[in-house]
Image (cartoon, rainbow, N blue to C red; front, side, top):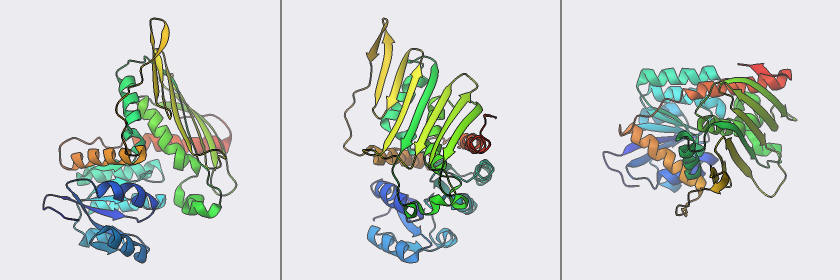
Length: 336
């Protein structure tokens, strides 16, 4: 990979699936960046990936990468329980950070990372890639502009089929994952719902989870917000069906919007009218396109072209997740 002196030098921490299917393919095609190093505790895996991708440095430890890689930014793609420590190390070394969700296992951990970023005067972006999907961005514009009126309810969910326990790996161990399907799939869906709703304070939570091991495998949560908005989230690792399902359905006073499939309706002259934007469809998969947009936003922030908003909303989101688990454990509604 050719590099210019002005390129942003990026180190990749973790060589697993999300690094290989999302971050690496996008970064290799972006101008003005160079992936200079990769680290993974499996040294052979790191070296093989570095060789295949033409990456100069391969390490087994983040401290080595930070010391020898001379990176401007890192992307953290390690198991959940390592995110906080790796983010803190990178910030202490003066690097900007993109971290796969979640930033940390707890709301207190997220707050520690935010304080470290503020002290280091560095950016932290949590990889909530769904926010950067073109259909989500379109829905957000309709809602933020008030075109659909006041939001009443948001229903969202994510169902996948993950049968063998060994496929889940560290995700099946609570100490490493921080939670099961609600942490894995519920966290990004609730982030999306709350973001679309304008981040209203959550005042009450009712939740139910089911699982056979240390973590939940099927979960549902009902959030009641200060401004009267109701958000319901349904997630599963045990969905037996045609394929993976994700959805977001917004009902508002003057219209509705949905994602997967993407539809927007408004009430005009007393009747529902389909006002779904019909732009040219991209040949790029929505998943990859969302990561490309996310990286473009982050890199613009690193270059000082835009001011990145510190992800303080993640502290509140994690408090909601913690309350969901408490509600499920105690089998009662919990007030925040």
